[in-house]
Image (cartoon, rainbow, N blue to C red; front, side, top):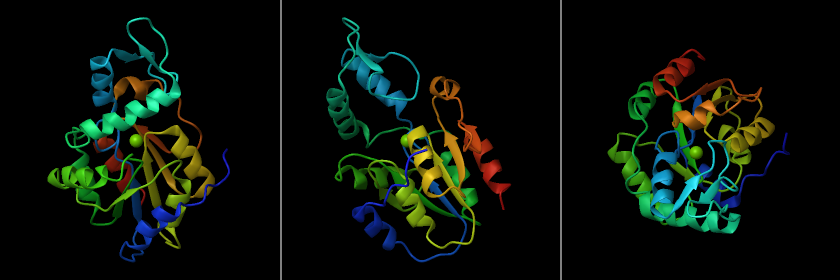
Length: 220
Ligand SMILES: [Mg+2]
């Protein structure tokens, strides 16, 4: 288990600008949870002559050039991800039922979206896209593991905190920083979902917003 990570100052500033509340809280990731990402990334890679080697949950070492099968080095993957988000973040498709499932939880839960979207210029683009889908919740941008931000968001709330994210790295980080949180690993892409072996701190593994909503309702 990793050491608890401190919250970054720029993330803390965003958290402190939220209205004070003591309601139960859902902290929800965006990519591959509310918006499709793997679907779009695969299309982007194919268009550029690359493909996923397998459906295990990592990007570095898992992308190869189709021409000769050579793995794409980590720094190039990183650069491609930045270009990818610049190109697609205005038109990513919604994961089915995400808007309705979140809306019906707002009677009892506060909802905050915590996303590791690269490029600060992409944040307003994402906010506009989500609002147009009926997903008007505050968007906080983070970078790196999310444990510190989640612990700061939970800040003294006596009520349950639910954390929803596709990434095993983020879930390990949240387990280290806020072990009392309810952890839902949500992966929209069936192939990647099926390749995941849930770790002991995962309370629900799902790729279905109806199931996820029912599970969250049963917590209170
Ligand atoms: Mg994600």
